[in-house]
Image (cartoon, rainbow, N blue to C red; front, side, top):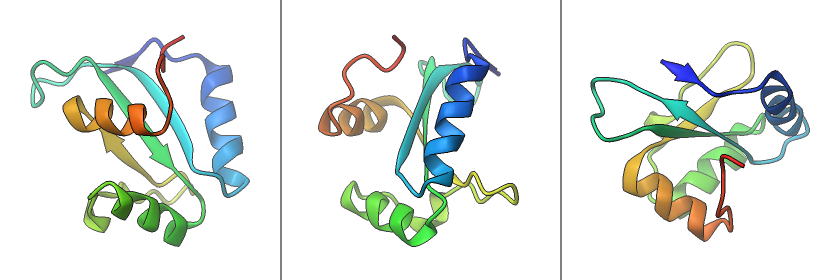
Amino acid sequence: MAFGLKKKELAEWKRQIDNGDIAFLTHYWLDDRFPGCKTVTKVGCADLEKLKNWGKRYGLKEEWIHYRKDGYSHFDLLGDTQKKILKEEGITHPLQ
């Protein structure tokens, strides 16, 4: 279940994706399949080759992309992987 997400934040994430940028969106999230994870970061881009190549830099597999018909395909980052990648991307306070 997703929560703590503002419409303005979602609209900005979609705008960045539509522009062909690598876009980050972190929000609170609870799922019994992932105990201990309280947030998820969605990393998307309209240019799927760019998204795939970005993911490769961090050891993310192409098959982990959540392909969406609406054009907002993305990786979901959780746990230690999320923390590591956000730090390397210079995103220190994703929920502010």
